[in-house]
Image (cartoon, rainbow, N blue to C red; front, side):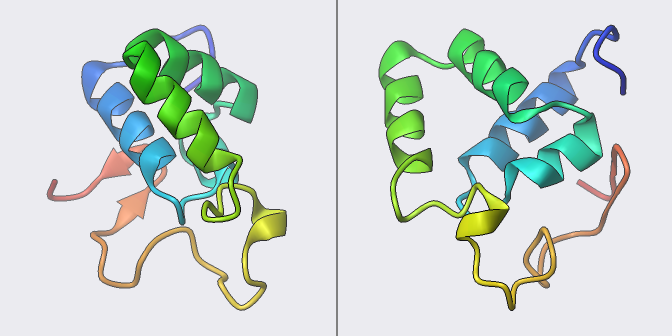
Length: 95
């Protein structure tokens, strides 16, 4: 997906879901949807209620979230849980 293409509702849902997941780094969203962290923040701001957006930003910037690879344990080498369904490029299999 390039940044000039409109985001489908399904992809929007998946991006928001990935952004909410503490263990999914922004780099995974960049890899799958070609959206930089700043673009994800703008997307979240536009699509969440103000209170939800503030709660999300507070959590992302807290010590709990591992949204940035530099905060992650170096032993974690994957973007997703081993029990999560396979994701390949922009395609989500058997959702």
